[in-house]
Image (tube, rainbow, N blue to C red; front, side, top):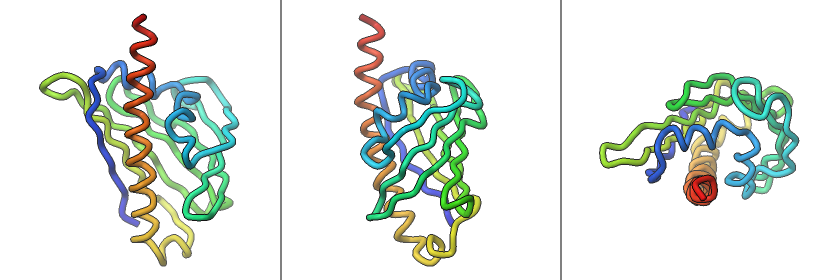
Length: 154
């Protein structure tokens, strides 16, 4: 299946964005519209940090194991996602780039390595659902970054 990428511009520096995203517990704050029942595991940040969550999308529920597998401050974080009893394997990649006018462009790419037949049969629909959910994720991330950075700076 083709990957899905969404992006947003935020006023925070790449370091501020990365440091927020690096803490797995922060992800619950901007993904809880479709990822619920968070159970954290491993270290709180960096490679090996993870969680098991319940994804609720398009009327279906599925447990997903999420683990950070690559971390390159302040440019990139990669999470491995395993669900559907191992039949679905994907990677979620946050890429953070400085903008020439200040701030950052944050992109999130969800790329399937393996997908169940049911997902592949309706791939355009699955991709549209993921694009919409992840567009909301980045909008909510921008709001959380604004709150977090202003609170940390106070």
